[in-house]
Image (cartoon, rainbow, N blue to C red; front, side, top):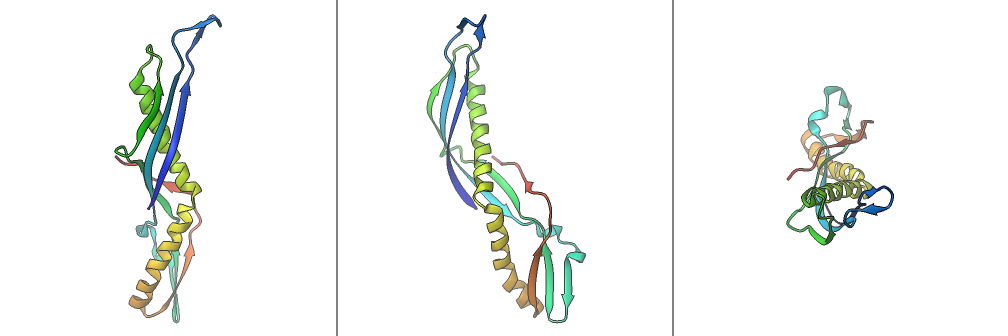
Length: 154
């Protein structure tokens, strides 16, 4: 589980009419957002063919790590500055900024190496447990595959 703090800026230019004048100012927002992302490995995706036993060793092919969820913590996120065109829907503009901020949390998580760390953590947790249960040495491999991401909740 990773925690992030991001600054999101969004600007929408007011439409110019006849390339001469525009109605109202441009809309701008600066949002300071906090959020979290969690990486996981879905062990239900391990099939029988992913487990091979050879004498004193168990080979297990783990599924690809996933970004289980990413979300904004709305209680800790706040608008730093806001300037809107009175002729536009202010609420829709703010919602768009929050959606952009949530996407920045996702990108920050992926760029931080959360998926690699998820695999490392899974091996650290599972290896001693499985070795103790099986009485054999456990060796992990990883399934090739596409990145899996579940949408943020809340």
